[in-house]
Image 1 (cartoon, rainbow, N blue to C red):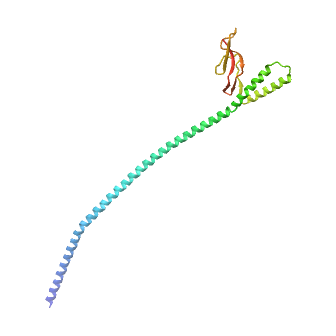
Image 2: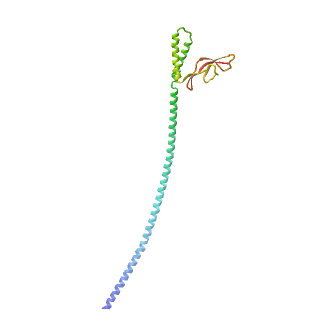
Image 3: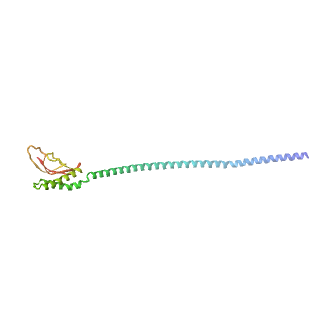
Length: 209
């Protein structure tokens, strides 16, 4: 009886050993079978990492290109702004100059219309008359007109006994006079006037030869 029990025990142990070996072989086989899958998974993971790296590099390159494009746009906008600002400043200066010019010479047309009135007053004053009231009246009008024009910058050109200046004088005739050098204004036929620094009307003169 004891021998049978021992045989059964040995058989059980042997069977367990065999089962253990079988399980180990099975695990080993599974491990061997799993190796290609693991390697494939590692390769797939590696490929994914390479793909992600390439994707990130591509995104970085795209961002760099976008930054360069934006920087170029910024420079272009800066240049356009600088040109627009310069154009605006030039226009402002031109408009200011035009305004100042118009303000400075605003009376020009009116003064040109008044000058013939002064000429007529001078002719009337040069006429002999016994009517002193008339003379005084004309003189008063003449003085008031010349004062008003002078206040606005209209001044008479000093021409008599001055060297002839084609910028200020208009020679209507010439004459020879002893003791007077050539090119001198010997007579003013019609007075000339300036409006500040601008010629309003040239003086009509007689010049020595």
